Length: 258
Image 1 (cartoon, one colour):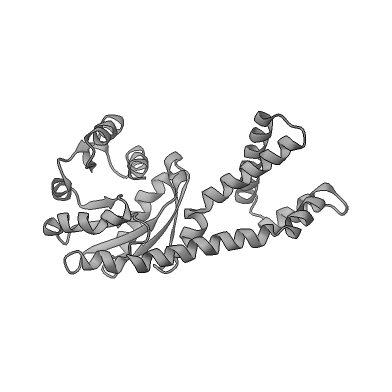
Image 2 (image 1 turned 30 degrees about the vertical axis):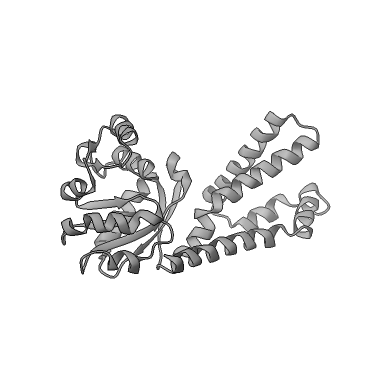
C-alpha cells in the first residue's frame, strides 16, 4: 500500500521523486521501490524523518508504536504524520509521539494499487485544515478521499476497506452461475467483470441514484424483475448489510485491542 501511494504521489504534480524518501526494513523491497520510482533511499527511519516533513506510516498495525518510538526523538513541529495502519487510533499514536504532533489517520483500500482507491481521512487533535488538505492531495493521487471523524473510519473500513472483497465475490458468483447456465468460463468471467464496471460507471456518470437505475432496467414480468426477486428471497441485500456491519464491528474491536 505504501508503494502504491508513493507511485501515485510521484506521478502527480504534488512533488517530485527527488523529494521523496523511503525506508523498508527489507533491503530488496527498498531497492526495487527506489529503482521503479527513482526516489531516495533512507538508511533507517530516523534518517527518513530528518529528510522529510510529511511522513507516511505504511506499516502493519502491530509495528506502529515501535516505529513511532524509533522516530519520536527526531519529530518536530514541522512534521505531519499520515498513518494507513488499520485499527491503530489517533489517541494511541499521539500518546507515542511528542506533545502537539500532527497526525492524520487514513483508511485506503487495495484498488489504490491501480489508482482507483477510496480513502477515509480523520484528523488528530493537533492537525490543521491545511494538514487535511495536504493529506487529501497526497492520497487522491491514488483515487478519491473522504474526510470523516475517527469513529466513522470503522464504517469506511466496512464499506470501502473491505468492500473490494465483496465485489470480487460478487463477480465470482455471477460468473460461476453463468457457467452453469451454459457459458464458457472465460466468457462468463469477462462478461461479469464488464457488467460490474459498466454498472458502477452508470451510477458515476449519469448522476442517477442506484435505485433509479434499477427501476430503469426493470420491467414488469421481465427477466431482471425475476432475478431481483430471487436475490431478495435469498437475502442478498441483508447479506451485504451484514457484511459491512461485521467488518465495521471488527474494525471497532481492533481499535479497542490496540
